Length: 278
Length: 124
Length: 109
Image 1 (cartoon, chains in turn cyan, blue, purple):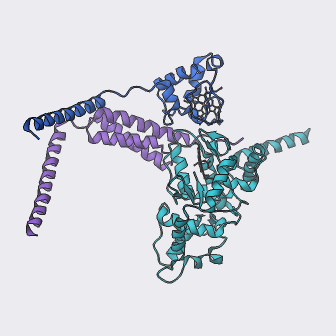
Image 2: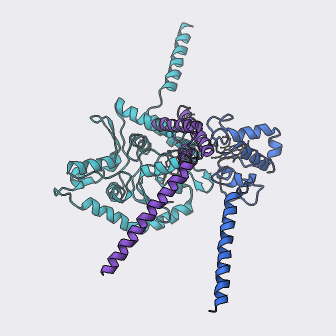
């Protein structure tokens, strides 16, 4: 009798703590991956990086065709020029990153214990500029930062996303990004998850909805008929506007934390940047 | 070009201008024709029901959606009109996790507009 | 060459004079209209502070922002009725946005 009470109390406390505290980042990721696997057992995990294309063999074939000779190749070349042109002091971006900038992007964003904040790859590029006496780029400027990442991130193509959340500061930043993802926003009252978790693979008027795991792996993307350059955070801004919420600042803390959460949920998936998207 | 012709041209040009002015003034005065229930349901800045609901009984629809149950046989399925109105006014009451926007609560549609949409949907 | 310069100077001057005259006429016109009513002024102030709070809470809707912009534009035109109408929308949409981000998260089951 006594033992049962004890056990019940324990169970009660467990239930309580599970409710009050959210899941560990890894449990959250596994749950989201498993939910997609259950709903779409035929789609391979690696193919989550194709997002909405994974649901439509036709659209995916068209995509593969286009990516054989991307019509936006010259834009990526502009990014390469930005990346390779030395700063005034003779140093280069490649000098700021291990391996000359190869296979690094999958480690971003990371939580910086000294600065007590999330650092994105874009912030690291700006830190590199600052350390070499150059003015930082505006992160919302697609003609500078956007183009620079369109090349710099390709140097990490094939790397597996490898985000780490360790320590209380990192966890708090992850949690803030997580809340952003599941919180309803805008007059139309959607959370990001309303579309990208609850209705994955279903069709919103004419568009398949991509799955959360894999969404952070292929940025920037060139979108639509005019191949407009979109960094991941510019895409956040567009999805916020879609639901009639005033977007947050690109490069600001809210989107950086969201990107931290969002990228963690893509862990284990291969990066491939500068791709086409509708 | 003779003088009379020039005058005729000038006068008709003037008339044309006046006519344009008057008609544009009238366009500004006259309120836009009120959208119908169907227009409100289709318009992606208003009801946008087609983003999530197919309407199998409505040949004019352009949608591939499969997010929500198709809107069909509504009169039979919603004998209580208030229930249908309530679903459109705030769908989170019936399902807190719903993806359907609360059209009335959040002021996406006015009461009059929701009533028109309800009338339209009832016919489906 | 010289005459050309004079012509340009004339053009510039006449433009300036016309601009100033036009401006004066407009100012006279608006001062003859009634100024914004106390009610409208108060409604506008409420909308502005509501929107500012929603921004601080990172909960602003685009509909609140654009209604406020319309109210401010109406205030410039001294249109009391329009100020009241748009300010009320802005205030309401701003407070709905703030209540929303205190609501439950979706998709937790």
